[in-house]
Image 1 (cartoon, rainbow, N blue to C red):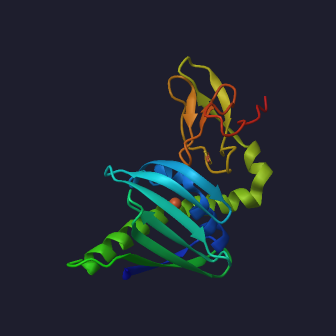
Image 2: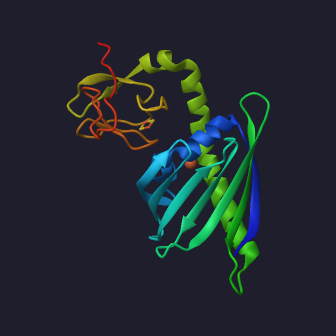
Length: 219
Ligand code: FES
Ligand SMILES: [Fe+2]
């Protein structure tokens, strides 16, 4: 039996649609939330949720599932031990706010075990999700801008200098989701986007990790 051990209510500066989009975005976990996740290997995903094997920074491996509520104003995020036993569940409901704002209410559940320190476990979940949302909120705000400004944003360029001294024009935002491409080329001219870890050749714009084509050279 699962028992409730805590909750967290957070207002964020983005709509419920952006909060749901972020929860569906399994790929960002080891990049945006590197404090908690070492890697994620997807089993299945669609617009209503996903199922993946995650490796936590502390070395713990578990399965994680996300199921979006039918009204797309909430979700259930659950984690499972290797034997399939559910070891934690976060239930989120979202209330729309004014403009680009919403309020997320998260409730935390764990299996009822003898001598469980409910308050300590509740605080652990609340602190962890508080940090996850702190890291997600800028991403949601950047996504709002990317969706509003779309094409114009993708044409903006800045210059980077490669190891051999040549200067190249690279986009301000990543061709994947229009989030800021806030990274510099390494000694091989490779740029690794901080949001999902896609790798780009700064000389050609080609996506070296292969998920997308890359950016268009404007010059
Ligand atoms: S925004 Fe996803 S890899 Fe850059
Ligand atoms: Fe996130």
